[in-house]
Image 1 (cartoon, rainbow, N blue to C red):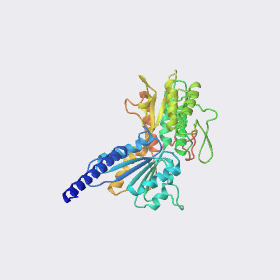
Image 2 (image 1 turned 60 degrees about the horizontal axis):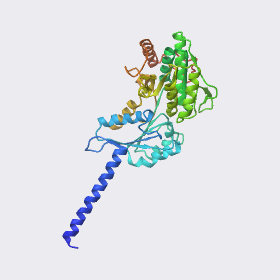
Image 3 (image 1 turned 60 degrees about the vertical axis):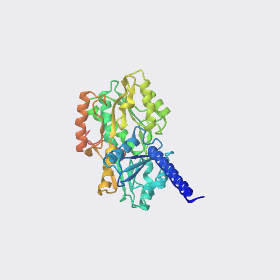
Image 4 (image 1 turned 90 degrees about the horizontal axis):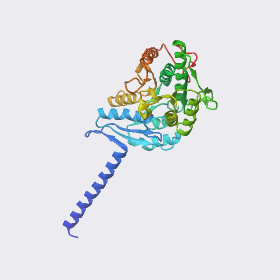
Length: 383
């Protein structure tokens, strides 16, 4: 073959390979990465989630939105989403181990990621943002310089849900439906019950908390916490059964803190002939409440996760990051309820009472019961 012919073949080969690699890279970016801008490389971020992924419209998506908001303001940063398909804690931790070498910061939303502490010890140059759990101890160590573990005072958000339900019910029967009695879920339950009891005492209501036989929860210590627990965060069928049973008993307001199981409760309420509403959880669920020309969502009890994920990433970017285990309360505007116009159906009177109570919670005057704060829904500071 002549030299000129060889040169032409080589050029064509290189061009072809470049095109193939570019095409593969584009596919990967469109499926897994969100990028903004060009130039100097910024933080490489990964988020590893439960099987519901970053587009679940709830917990995972809110965490992801915090990352996207950070990237909007830091145009060279990138994020890759990884979905762990089983929900098993060992598999969740392994999913993080599989990618740790390739990223600067890994965000892990969910209790199943507590075991990442071992990975953090082995990779001190990597930063981990853990939401909804504390890291598992490693040789007695519980705090890690490269893990920022966020927990939220769900009992505060649950308290506002309970107040709202007690102030808005017409049948004087309300209930909470939960998934599994993990601490965060029990916090929501105890907070809700605290809010109902507060409204009963302070505003002279007479509202009953309805619990179904056979659905009591058992927390991580083995204690019976009562409530209405489906035993799963991904069982819509059982959620619908519980929802229908509560409606049959006259409940007209249901606080739904049950993950995917809660979708079944939403369905039961949408199909109900009676005027029944739900209170959403974790994020603003008003859009999920659309039911023809109506909406079944009264308000939502929320944890402002996106805001706090973005704050943590900002601290990494500006060099002020500090590891540690924190619980975020109303005093940092991290817990609360949805009161934006067009996203709730609270009366002006209820909204006014909730806003007044929010300031008391923020000041520490009201301290709703949680799974482990040694208060009960029947006896807590501020009642």
